[in-house]
Length: 213
Image 1 (cartoon, helix red, strand yellow):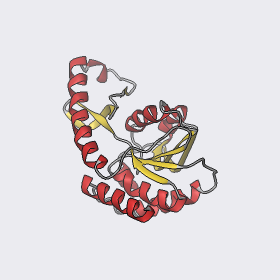
Image 2 (cartoon, rainbow, N blue to C red; image 1 turned 30 degrees about the horizontal axis):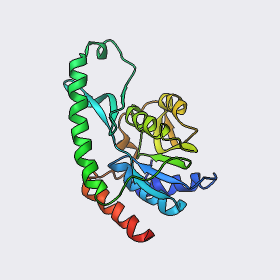
Image 3 (cartoon, one colour; image 1 turned 90 degrees about the horizontal axis):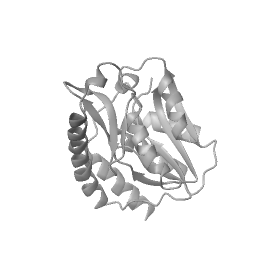
Image 4 (cartoon, rainbow, N blue to C red; image 1 turned 90 degrees about the vertical axis):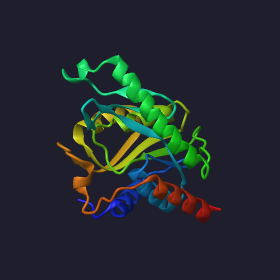
């Protein structure tokens, strides 16, 4: 159990200090991951940026993810069960376009204060405040890997054990403070888990820019 995202971030930073990085870059997944990413970047002396990906919602169950899409349009679909197999290609296409529209609006606001960081040849630490299905993280990792980083490291406070095994195929190192056989919601592992909006994301990026100017 973590007190809040800040507590989890400091614990993650302590774990990551055990490794050596090449020109490290922290890429945080908005929104909650940016709170943790900002602290990691500060404590590790790394550059901070965001990587945009978002889950695809299941029909009639918007809290359930059937996959994810990145801002570049890369699509990842979860392993399907009998219920998911009935989801039409037309629904997936419409949901993908809907999420891409949201990511485009978010990206436009973010890129006004933070241009995209270069990835090639660097140690890239992709961070979120927790992993549930893993689909959003995988969509992000596929984008990062395509840009030829020196290494890809996933850092997260909590993740289900089966998803860790799956995600390890997409990265060079997986750093997780707490693994659990069953994960209902990420928030249940935090005493305080307030919502994070785009305004706070932009504030954190501006503050990082001012601190490193």
